Image (cartoon, rainbow, N blue to C red; front, side, top):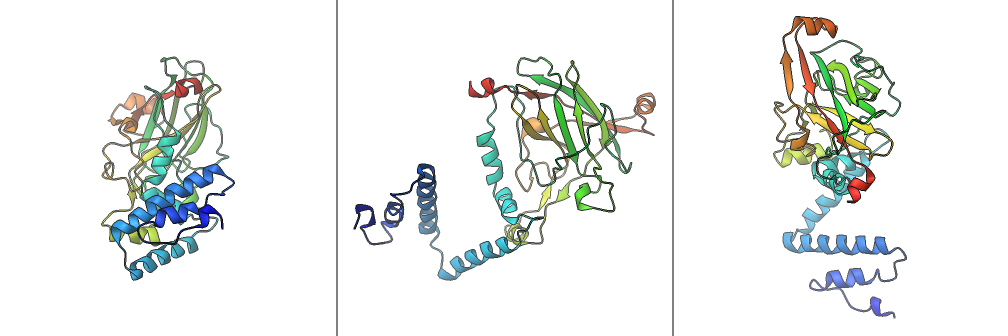
Length: 297
């Protein structure tokens, strides 16, 4: 019998006995991960002291969560989201230097092949909702414009739905577009004001939120993926600070630096120039991209 196989399981030495069996793990990273997970899980069980019925309910919750997963739905990702784990993993893997724009989660509704559009285009193809003009600059951490930066943009409509959720109702690629900056690093496009929306709440995660007294809503936001040669890719949102759920995002995606002013504009001449019929919302927001050497520093 090898040394690591010796020792019988007791409540007091449970961690040492279980992690000791992993001594011959070929992958040192896997060994480290399992040691930490085992230690923390055993600590939680010892603190909570669940009944056997409670532990069975936990197993059944995870089982039902797995049964809900398919090529269109990933209930475990949703569970990770509402526990704040997705945002924590994102924060750890996307630490930014001072002055650079912060990241947030990608979300489940990105479409890889959205069409590239001329700067200033209107990404709202069905023209439903309150008109909105979004503009700003893409800069580096020294305040210089980033030329040829690619912005991949998408959002929910004024009812809180993405186009992929309403096939046959919204046009394909509605409220999606890809734009490329010029030498001045400026971007601008037209859209409609998004609305807060419900994350899937008809499964195990939704029931968990209900049991915890939590709502299943995300505040209104616009998604961005920004790419430029020589810079770290940025996946982020900008949020409406006046949204009723801005301080209680179900997936913890809001960061203070990502709040943008949504300003109502009553200017007939500007509306005419933008091909809007009346008042509109204006959002101005600058993004700051970091170079790999900035991140390492």
